[in-house]
Structures are given as C-alpha cells and as structure tokens.
Length: 224
Image (cartoon, rainbow, N blue to C red; front, top):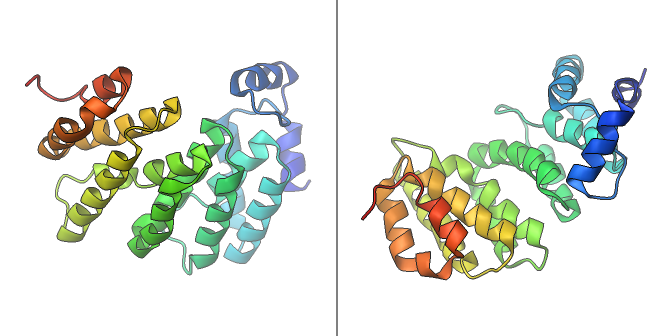
C-alpha cells in the first residue's frame, strides 16, 4: 500500500464524523487518532531518505485530507535534519493554508525545530506578524514558543525573547480570539522560566489584552 492507503485503511467513519464536527474546516476526515498517525510516520521516517520524505510530506499535504496533513507535519517534526533548508521551505509554504488550530499547531511544531536549528529564520517569521491572514500571525508566536522555555538562556536567546515579546506587544490589540490566546500562551509559558520578563510585559501591555487573555497570561505569576 501507499502511505496514503495505509492511512485510509485505518479510517473510522464514526470518529471521522465527530472530528469534522469538532474541527469545522471543510475537508475530508478519516477518523484516525494522532498516535496511530505517529506510528506510521515513525516507520516512514526510518525507511525513507530525506528527499523521499520531503516528497511524501508535500504529497500528503496536497491531498487536503486532515490526517494526511497531520502526517506530513509529523514527517518533518525532527530536531536534526541535515540539510534542512528544503524542510523549512516546505513547512513555511504550508502556512497560508492554515485554517484551524490543529493542523496549524502540528505544522508549527515542525517549524519550531527548524527555527531552533537556524534562528536567522526568525527574519521570515517576523514578517508574518503583520499578515492579513490570522493563522499566519498566530504561527509567528506558536513557532517561537521554544524561546519561552529555557531556564538558562544564552544572550542570543534573551535577545530573541525580547524580539518576540515585541511581536506580542504589536498583537496585543488584535481582537481575534486566537491571537489573544496565542499572546497569552507565549507570556504564560515564559512566566514559568522568566517571571520578571512576563510581569514587565503585562505591566506595559496587559491592559491592551482582552480580560481572558490577561488572566491566562498571568496564571503562573504571584499576585502583585
């Protein structure tokens, strides 16, 4: 069987109907849970050359089947890919297609690995902050989440944190729920590793966030 046929063989019509109702994006759903998709992609990744993996990921994404797109992202979710420029370019080519949080997050996690491997790519991501496409704006924050999590950041990492907090400030007045949630997510995760930076952001920009986002961003901070 082809990889797509392997996915289709696992289809569960009842789960597919529930997934379609939940995700709401108008595409085919097979009803295959993520752990089963990961079992397949782990094997494909081990069996295929990088060139073949890239081709398969591109083909699976083009099907516009939910599980196939998840599999495409999982094929490229790997810390070490060398060379990785083609993988990065493929992932970024998917960003304009994002139309829901699930596929956007699976692909953004793959993108996180490529950004950590080559932080100069943040220049590309920064251009997304002003995109008219909401999911592109959101991806700028989701793909940079690794910089919220370091307990002992290097000087370069601190500079990147400050840079992305600037993006968060630029997006603080964006009224879209998913953008507010993404800003809150970034600051909340940062607060666990750099409470002072998170508190400073909220002191300067918290009143520009919607109340739910401000509360979420401050969830792990001590009351002032």
